[in-house]
Length: 393
Ligand code: SAH
Ligand code: SF4
Image (cartoon, rainbow, N blue to C red; front, side, top):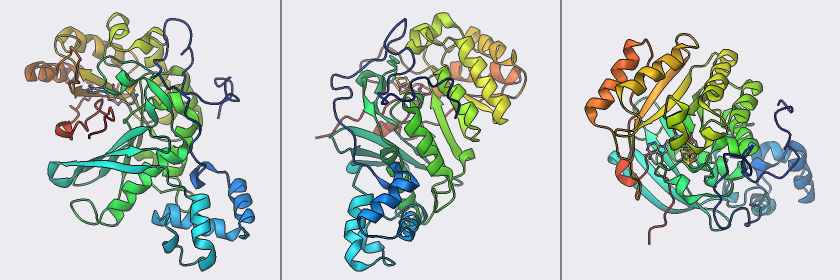
């Protein structure tokens, strides 16, 4: 990891982004921001040495840690009764010490004939977060949360309206993945036995505001068992609102994850209105950093663009977007226009179908690949930007 861009590395992570307390951009914090204490330490939060030390406390030799890693990463198991290779007298104790319950299902909503599942989870402190599983014929994608709420304040986004409560731990982030991977593995999702193949950090939160835990989760999702779940880094997408220092840090890691940048507007004038973070890192800085990521990783960057009727969806916007992207060369970015999922109390609505089509046509004619994001789960508020974790009574 490059330390030069991470001068706050010794401070506890609060989710406050660079410049987030001063200047033109400020994080939007919820009333109970960071007042909640830390989640219980989980196997996924511990270094190898910490695991070994904890095992020793329980009177267990080092090789038992390897067995636990096999259960967790290889079989998605955390339950004492599954630890058949363990001394019976130590199973419950080990499960409790290494695998405290970090996420508890509150509700589950199902759509698209059982192939879209949105789960609302309660964390140890009562915080609520969500994840969405989407099964397709050739892949299964889990959209996960990385923060409780979000501090970036994008006015069209449901999560943004909550403000930021706190960062999630690596264990909390990873547990969303483990539970979904287990459900797929056990054939509990419509379509029978399968495998969780893709992860997108597009649920609640700004991943770059919780860099350390997100990176640790990425490593544990992508490493092969027994170090991780073995979901290829190439199938992991980290989506950011454009926190440039975070993009630079990720570039320096050299992990081949896909980077998605939520641009939503081709000019600073317009983006200042739609994405408050633009006042801290403008479109030029964001696109420069995104293109550097492409150069370093050789992975095409996704440019996310929520189409808002009459705001950013006109021919002039598409043309300027094409020009800004082509400025850096060909084939380095893929545009993902997203039909806006209207949220309660927001003045913005989705584009007209003919404007969506025109937007795509202009990009295509300019030689830029662009595909409209499908909006699965819209009827259960599971689509992007609608993850507001309202508890249904
Ligand atoms: N904070 C990160 C990742 C989570 S949001 C980010 O902003 O990139 C995931 C995606 O959903 C982002 O591209 C975001 O801009 C988009 N989004 C937010 N609200 C939306 C809405 N109401 N309709 C459609 N997309 C939305
Ligand atoms: Fe946060 Fe992303 Fe929503 Fe903006 S769009 S408020 S960065 S979750």
